[in-house]
Length: 212
Figure 1 (cartoon, rainbow, N blue to C red):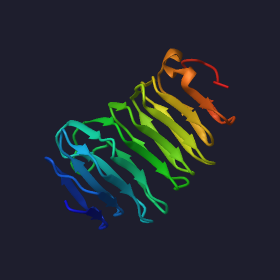
Figure 2 (cartoon, helix red, strand yellow):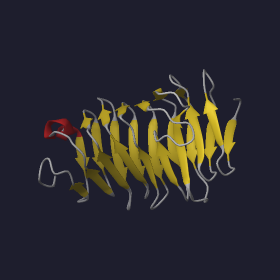
Figure 3 (cartoon, helix red, strand yellow):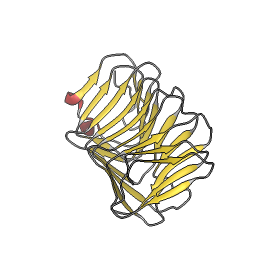
Figure 4 (cartoon, rainbow, N blue to C red):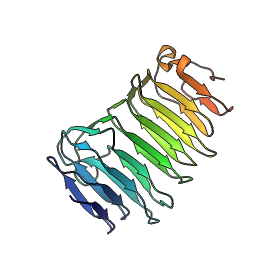
């Protein structure tokens, strides 16, 4: 695609297969969906946008497989987004997604709106962030050396769930980082943890205490 994709109509959906690429995909339509084929590499930007309520989806194309967000790729919200965003959940097409993030997944400029990354497996060597009031909920992530988990700005919330581990950096400079699900203290990588405000909460029962 030489340019952008715009999914502005209600229930609009597009499959991205083979070596197809685009600059930006604008998901503003009510219950709009983008379905990627196994082995696809996202080098552009998927933008959740529009005041229209309802859900937006990034999913597989009906066949289970791996989607890679390349170093230049991103999935993010845009200011004024009025819906709910989901990555990995099957809606129009289905298929189990394994996600490799080498780029950026970012919920930003959207107070009270959340990107939910609901997967059996997410490997992160890029950036997962909630900033400027955004919300990001991530399940079953393995954040590798070089990966970053970041929360910044008043009202921002990033929640980790499922079974997860972190060998990269964690930073809280505003908002709230919820450590849920199942993890080991050794897998927090505390030497690389930056906490500048008293807003980090421990909610999983495994440790039975708050990280203060």
